[in-house]
Every structure is written in C-alpha cells, then in structure tokens.
Length: 293
Image (cartoon, rainbow, N blue to C red; front, side):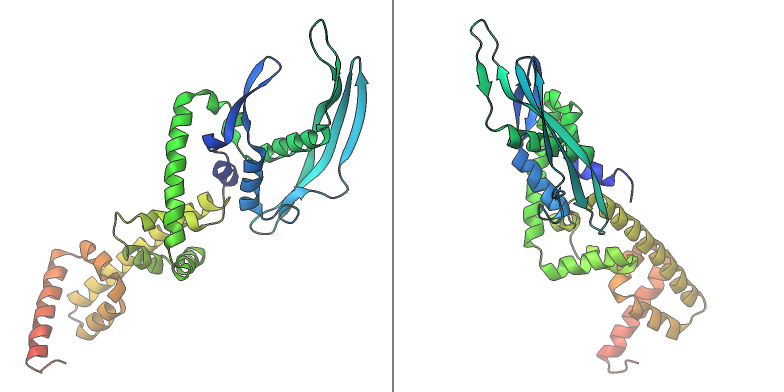
C-alpha cells in the first residue's frame, strides 16, 4: 500500500457540501463539518470507537488579549485503520470568547458557542492532516473548472454506489476473496462473466471500505495481470500437448480450463485453433453416431 493511497482516497470533496466563507479579509471555502464526520466514519467506523477525541484529553485555556478573551483548545485525536492499527496526534484551535466589535460604536460580544466551534475547528484540522478534503485546503476549489469536474465525478460515484448496492452480497464476497487471495485465474474468470460495458465491472471497485479503494483497485489490477500470465502458461501447455499429439493430455487440460477457454482462445496459434475445431467436429460426429469416447 502506498503512503498516499489513503490520502488520495479521502482528499476529494463533494462541492455540494461546501460554501464560500470569510475569515477577516480572507475568502475561503468552508466544508460542512457533518459531511467530514460522515466521511471519517465511513473510513474508520463510529465516532468514539473507530476515531475521535481521546477521552480526558481536552483542555480549554483562556487568554486575555486587550479587548479580547481567547479560548485555546487542545486535545488528542485518534483513529483506527482498516487493518487495526491505531494512530493518535495532538489537535488544537483557538476562538474568541469575548471580543469588541469593530466600528466607532463597538460593543463587547460574547460567543456562547465558542466551545463547540473550537472542537469542530480542531477536528477539521486534525482530519486534514490525514488527507480529508485536501483539495479544499490545497486551494483547488479556487478553480471553477475543478469544481465542475468534481461535480461530474460525484454524480458518477453515486451512480456506481447504486450499482454496487444492487450486486448480490455473495458476489461481492467472492470478488473480494479472489483479490485478497491473489487468485488471478479465478478473478479473470469471475470478471469475464460480465459484459465489457456492464457497469458492474467498475462497480466492484466501489465495494471496498472507504480509505482502501485505491489500494485494493491496484491489487485487483495486479491480480488480473498475474491471472493473464497464468493463462499464457496454460496456452503454452496446451500447445505442447497438441504438438506431441497427447490426446489424454489435451482432454484433461482442456476440461480443466473450461471456465478459461474464452480467454485462452485469442492466444492460441492458428494451428492449435484448427486442431481443436477439427477435434470438436469429430467429437460431435461420434456423439451423434453413439461412438463417443
């Protein structure tokens, strides 16, 4: 697994869950905190179990600065990866508790939501350390074309999720088992059962838990590659049986390759194809005359 696999998986943001915001004189893109929590839950599990703030680690410290009282918030965030590894690191934020509004008639204002704001801001920053919504933090949302492209991507992702939801769970279990086990021949045969344009072929990639899709998609491609190498080896074995006219070897080998025949045929020599075609014709004639052996 690449160090950036998880980052790349969670880095893209659905534009629907963002809005323009302003901090002082600076224009920014704000992300819906609940959308972030949903994505973190999809990647790690329930809040407080798979990820969250370490109980007892939160600390609120208050600092007076001229006409402003600041709250400095510090805590420890933790998360548990798909393979059970636990990580934790410090997060922090600061917000104004009491401050004087601007203007000639400025007055003191108390923010009674400061604690919630401080925790939310710290969690947002903490999740950003892991790559969540990195496209926003890397200013890609300043580009209207990027936002339009992401909107199209999100629509396609939702369609794939719908298709994935329609696939029987047993099929998903089989598919994931072949990839996890690195069973290339089984995976080639399994994926070959779907038409080339069948959206289910791509939808299987969406069946992996969030945060693992990139790595498992690469594992899928590697397994398919190994499967095709194995098919080439089977083709060479068949060529060898045909060259030596080993009828028993041909029968047993070809029967063993029943589910892989359509993948092997494009790689067979013209001579081998002609031999098998002739053999099939003879076998059919013998079957019709009752002389099949």
